[in-house]
Image (cartoon, rainbow, N blue to C red):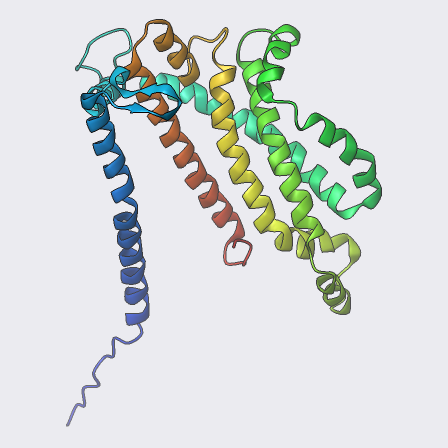
Length: 290
């Protein structure tokens, strides 16, 4: 009896392997392109401090801490055991408190701005009624609201969350309105030809088509939330990244100020990546993102 052995072909597995390899290569290339700028910035920073450079706007780099001093402070903030002062190992406590405040203010802004933006984008009557008032309030700086928030809300988390909400809502609202108004009319015509009910066009047509604009607004608003957080945490709050900067300013600890600034930048970067991950998980394979 003759047994014929049919060779197993591995072509079916090759596309998946090739896709993973391509994705890994793209990430590596992206990292390599991104590295030179921060490395150059650190080198110039170190040279400027040691050389006492004077920059435009009267900036005197001789008063700044060196990258090495800031690095030591970052390590001490995170794990302790380096400088052993009252701030050692407290980073995660401050970062967690700030992240909770940002998440709450941002979530409230999303819950208000997205439905309101959709309504204003779809209804000309709602747009005409609300647009003048919103554009009258929008130019008022969030920092101008801070003293009023302390008076009408009081010290503590709620005033900070309110300021974060104000910082985030208009970016989400305006981008949602623009995204909804930019939905091509032919999509509604195609949905009607396919028998889609008018009540379902919001989920099947409007939201998918407007999603790139909404996502852009969410990302801008999340970044602004971290910016305003420092303002909200400067008064009446003892735990938080903004409060940490205030305490460092009062004690003239420039290394702590710069270290916390770096932490806020990293927190904003990670929050943006987490937001995009959540949106991609919700979107699945649907082409909702640019």
